[in-house]
Image (tube, rainbow, N blue to C red; front, side, top):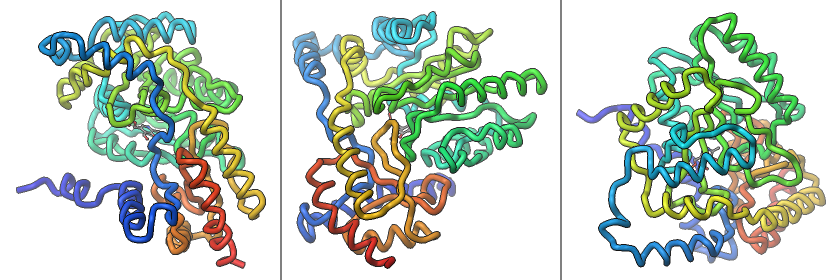
Length: 392
Ligand code: PLP
């Protein structure tokens, strides 16, 4: 008999993918230029030329070596490159044995949650949040506890987190720069979180891990993203090159268990064990080798900055409210009615494809992914204007 939960997950694909598929269908029906698809977070800029050069170089290697298995956590040289990069950028004494390469941030998060929880534990997420967190947490037979961010400034609500933490709390997941809001938590906010978690660890007598999901770390617009492991000891970073190097389909990322954790080697062993138990071993090898040499390649943030300008100026003119994004490539737009699902349906009538806040554990807002071509953004003006007119 098939597993009912798995059946549900498989037969009800996530809304964003549904919306994306709908967009493809509409483009085929009415022409690409008539659909304004802000649904999915697929980077619109190409991977840096160094990636292609590296792949070409690798293709010269004997195939039986190039395509061979690596050790489960990945090639030592690639893990060393990650550790060196973290040490150079953030001054943390990172070592390669604390780095576990994965098939993207998704695998990194699954492994991390499995490594540090027991069935019945609670894992806190800050809403709105990347919806797959709930699937991951529930897959580990834990409860996903949603704590809303402060709606005044979309920073972590430390008082609300304090209320939510209890003896069952195993971890808190944060994501900055944030999907879907585009906010970046300030250093002060991270320091307050660290102080709270330290206090609660002492009070409850067990670790509360901070899982820092950072696939958008490099995509920022003039603000710093504090490196959480420098502020809180029990930190585990989950990272992906999907966005920074525009490699989403190549599935490459890592788990970094902070070297500062008192029993860091044991936590790393649990990470490796979770990788084994879940089948996330030996991340795609070609891209382990790409990362080894391309890790320092700068992210082309300029294109997203330009898109952000075009979109926000347009929405300013039309009178929409939104949260000015400091990072990532998402705009969090206030829905023009309380029911953001209904707002999303109205937008669809104008071929404007957004993602309603409900998909992120929120309501009253919609997400627009602006990692699309600047022309699509410019041409979508009439759709945004018509949507606004529907409410006037
Ligand atoms: N975490 C967040 C916040 C994301 O937005 C995404 C992808 O969009 C992921 C994790 C998953 O990243 P990956 O594609 O590397 O698995």
